[in-house]
Length: 443
Image (cartoon, rainbow, N blue to C red; front, side):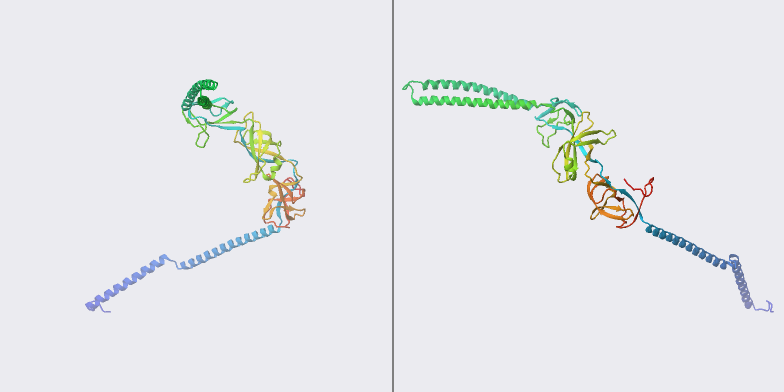
């Protein structure tokens, strides 16, 4: 082996560098190998593959379990549906009954005052004072207010002066007529030849003219007297008085307010007064019951809707005798005694009538079925078979329907029957609680 001394200088340096590079590469390789060996074991890949396979199996098991549960529920639902479809539908039934001896009918009504008057001014002026207020009870002729009328007072004074002037004119014309009469008679009775015929005619014409002026003066007196009476009558309306015994319900004036005579839409009223004893009750009855309920003297019951409900018995006093073409109803009027003031004008009340029986049958409103070809009921026979029967309605008070035809007393009809039930289908009748099976189900 050559020694360093034997090796050439250039060749020796190159060999040393080659040895150092080889040692460095070996060190790097050993470092990398050591690093890999410390991060991963030899069976790391096997464990990873086993974990993935386990997760896949678990997911598959869960999927199969969920799918099985859903299939089981679907199967149970189908079985329950088949069971429900195979069983007959269950219905409640009611027995058709004859109409009651007297069937009640309640209709809404409204009260109105026996008298109701709106008080307007009959003269122009301004309010001097008012005496009564809303809620006050007044007697016929009692003072309500006074109106100051300076213009009317001046017109009355002027008319009285003109009347006095006309009276003086009558006296003057009467004197002239008396003188003309005397002159005419003297000239008329003069012997022939003393005065001419023309003079006689002139005196006669003068007398007739004086009489005419007297008549005109008297007519002027009558005219002036009528004017004085007119203004005097208007002056009476300076005192506003009650037209009847009643209650003041409205007051629209105060001291100093200007008022205008008249009752136009632009004129403000002074008072509103009503008389409430007796009181009227208006009720509109349906067209199909109009002829039956319009008999005067029929007893009715009037009831208020309030915590202290007031009930009064009265009679039908008047009927309109004609149908309202818009509402197809007829108005009835009932007079109710109201000495204690329990009823007020404008109140809502319920009016109860008693309808005479007509030998018909009745069912609850819930047993009625409305279809395109008219009202029907679902009859249920003893075997539970359903048949739909058309009926005609005689009366309808909301809860009970009176039928004129279609079913007979004693038959059974279904209540609130489902639209899924068809003609001829067999149904199961529900038995009410505390009622033995096989018993008749009635109202």
